[in-house]
Image (cartoon, rainbow, N blue to C red; front, side):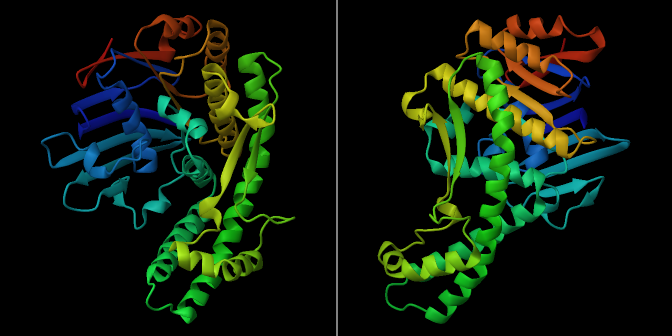
Length: 372
């Protein structure tokens, strides 16, 4: 898949832009705060219909304006695909593919796969379990629409269950039992997808981490369901768990066990990496995770390879690790790449390995974009 053309109106600090890109490498340069990340975020938004930073839609509309428009022109295999997203302050956003409006936004997710690496991704390691669940949901949803549907159904039912638990004056047991039954099937599907995805991810992740760091660090990644059993939790296991924790849930006012409490353990020397890892180790770990997901998506969908977005990826890495990442992204394993940096030092290293026709340089200043 190739993003050929991008047009934006009133997106964050970008009043308007109209850009055509290279099929291989697109370098976005400029000082901090000028809008480089916003340009990258618009490409992410076209794929996921939301910001990489998980901000409300109203916050992606340029200050003082009432609407934003994003338009992308793609080459997907032999097909030309246009995506148009309209966002307003008053109405739900509208998403169209080849001028036809989607009936459901979920039908769009996974159609234009993207893998983004950004400074905020360090929260995957340093932050709480909610960040890692978002990470799993975002990546697995690109592979599996049934998984996305299960997560959405489960979250909706979970909200209803928690609302019942908060009603201290009266507990509607029949409705609670119905919700438990409906949630259990979705919960089983979610943990099955997460466990299978983690096992596929692990060997590829380990390979990338070893290459990037050239070290003997003993790292690992483990899926940790909140419901501890000697096997992968099944629907009946969740039913039993919610029955046994009902009094605790009533006291707390929310559901204490389920996929919404799962975690992804990120380990260094059998210890959580956030506790002992250096900045370089943590960032290398995160980059290896994202490269592994890119590899998985590329293997699953060879005719629709993801776009790789690298936002300020070289910060806090030593020269040797940077050199190995440069060698990776300049190779044939990756398709179209968008990369930001405040200077051209590392970008020029990659450009030196490519023919003139395979890269484009865009300078961003105060939201204005110019192709050099």
